[in-house]
Length: 275
Image (cartoon, rainbow, N blue to C red; front, side):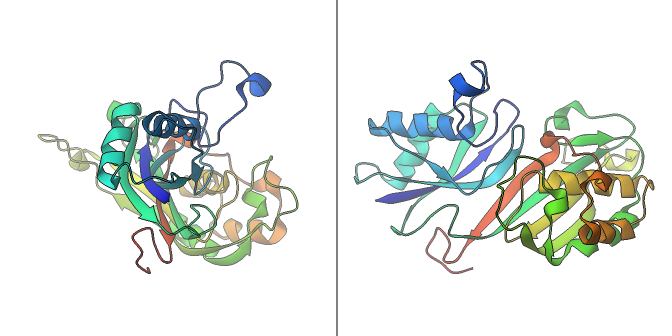
């Protein structure tokens, strides 16, 4: 039988999703999300279990909707028992939100049709410690209208190689389709008794929904949008980057801590429903 997990995690204490060879890379490398989840599943089932994720989030990147699957040919545990058992074994910065039994041909990566990432900039006169692990504080007020104009150039099917970091899969197509791209200013999370929004604190969210993403693509886009928001470059330069493919003109790669994988879509989805 095949099971799918919906996972949420904070990436701060991990080297990313992908399991690493510690002896080859370096002995003191942080653990990966994948190996941590595999260890919990294997402990619960008492047999070695491999877990396959929908994609490789980088070191420090978070997730609210990472999906992974594994095969366990037994009906020993219900999906609810699986969820409770895994959460009792996993560290507190990784949680299993849902467990589903899925079709034998379901694949967390290959069956995915869309993914959504958001990058979060924290705005305000000082950084709020409560949000420092999941946002990038920018003191200067960002020009949202310019950022919105710039990100609109990304919608549609383009060759996004210019935003791909070194180490991407050589020989593979770098053409991707961005279905929705937007920049919004969001209210601060509610902290009872506080008037943060009245004191010019806010979150600037860069949201990208697409059929797939290249290595550090969203972080490269976020860093470039930051320069637009700080009026260091024109919104039209985003279009120019897609045409010229000049990697040297891309903005700085934004820190991983501001990026979250929010959702992965399937058709049919892990519930067996079509989206």
